[in-house]
Length: 243
Ligand SMILES: Cc1cc2nc3c(=O)[nH]c(=O)nc-3n(C[C@H](O)[C@H](O)[C@H](O)COP(=O)(O)OP(=O)(O)OC[C@H]3O[C@@H](n4cnc5c(N)ncnc54)[C@H](O)[C@@H]3O)c2cc1C
Ligand code: FES
Image (cartoon, rainbow, N blue to C red; front, side, top):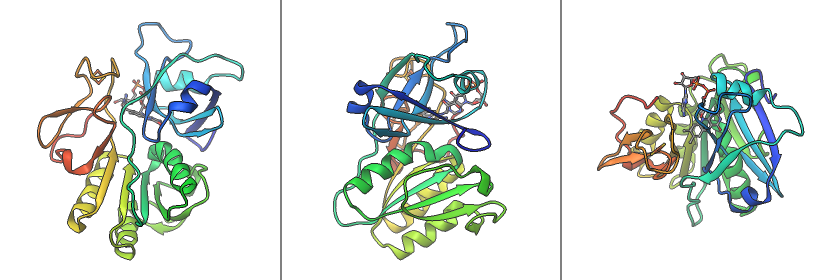
């Protein structure tokens, strides 16, 4: 376990490790479940050598079966899939904003930003200190609902402070829809680059079924193929959150 409610699953795959980019995901077949159960999308949370990590919260039957995996088992995956985060070039501060298990794809992004020796800050929000999960050491501002670690309140309050200290920053976010919407608003108000990783129920995972579509400011966007990472300005934030 990586926290009271979070599981870290590590496996070796040279093929995935070689081609994975931060923000991409795998479709994972839940082990020990009916073959009729759809594969579940899980972000690539970190890569080191040929070791790949997935970090997930148990939400239902599929993720519960993943949490029950024992060492030595083989898992059935498709990927890497989807469009990754694009690390903004230039001498700017990079600010990652994570809400809860939204830290998952950002761990890998932080590793890649650090490898380029770029300045980075993590704004990390959780309900309590117990929910914080391990990630690489970077400058960070933590926000918890109950004040048990860092500032008491929303991670977007931490983000506002961070962007005001770093004009021109590039922002990358993953977390619940209301957090992403507020992150997009804060960045739009200041004219900052903002990339968000969205979640939606998936079936095919490759843009064929439209099952994961969300409203964009122009046309509909598939989370699996056009995303999951989008420029925040291309998402219609007035829609109901995708389920
Ligand atoms: C691109 C992408 C990357 C993701 N990465 C991660 C990750 O790194 N770690 C992680 O913990 N979770 C991640 N998720 C969410 C994860 O896919 C769902 O929690 C999982 O599919 C639930 O399956 P289940 O069988 O356990 O639960 P189910 O019984 O299928 O559903 C239980 C609950 O989870 C919700 N849910 C189901 N599927 C999704 C979904 N695709 N997105 C959001 N909510 C869903 C349902 O609405 C329901 O309330 C990601 C989702 C997407 C689309
Ligand atoms: S899951 Fe089929 S189009 Fe995205």
